[in-house]
Image 1 (cartoon, rainbow over the protein chains, first blue to last red):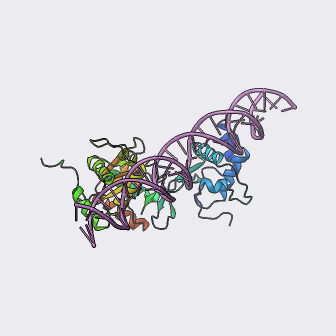
Image 2 (tube, rainbow over the protein chains, first blue to last red; image 1 turned 120 degrees about the vertical axis):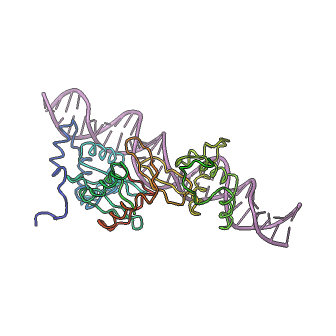
Image 3 (cartoon, each protein chain N blue to C red; image 1 turned 60 degrees about the vertical axis):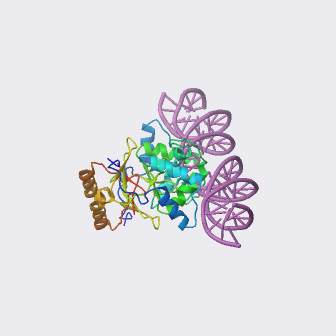
Length: 144
Length: 144
DNA sequence: CAACCAACTGAGACTGACTTGCAATAGCCG
DNA sequence: CGGCTATTGCAAGTCAGTCTCAGTTGGTTG
């Protein structure tokens, strides 16, 4: 009972781990940055920049939207964060995990379903064989 | 040698055919509408509303962008037109064909490759069997 | 074939999702 | 502690559409 069993291991364990990576890359762990990370750690599904900016964590400290976007971009370049585009609407951000989660998007209810990348390997292989196309569903999910 | 062999049969044959459907639905075939259709008939791949508005046909008569969007929407509701979202960037519109063409999008070169829906049926079936998700790649293509 | 009227058009304002410029601020390495 | 420069916060800008509204026009009808 130490952790919510269904969460796959993240690419980075905690904020300190990320801080180290950040500093190694000549960056800093600022207050705004920490707020973004806290919101992402608190979220159970990919969330929008808007949601992060309006401070959905326990503290609910709102931060600047432009800064949130810049930080998400920076953290994504570091491999800490990833984002998906589910249909129309804003992009959704989440902490990067080790298995490269991919997504299914429901066109009717708008829900995003996470799928471990390996469960799509057979489908990916079939697409490559039949169409010569190396598919990825991590940034743009499978709609239907 | 009567037609460019590789074009699949359209849902509507020509402008007159569309005009009839339009009128049946209480609509009109206006000059602006005709311009949109001409641009789409002239295009060999899905094009943007911007391109249609700037008049890429032989005549190059520019038209109002808002009107183009309204007309594309109307024609889409009629089943004459469809559109795809290739990654970021604007949506791309084309005349609807009978086989429900689907698409592959190249993340590197940005190119959109048309694929007849039946060539993706096996993949679609596999996705349904493994994930219980009825996939469609006509509005959001397969990226990779 | 003229008149009528709802379906359109065009211009501009507006929205949502970001992105950029810039002066002020603040991590962090020494 | 000091200083260098990454980062912030705000405002303004951009891009892809959408909406409002007064004026126009297809096309059906009298």
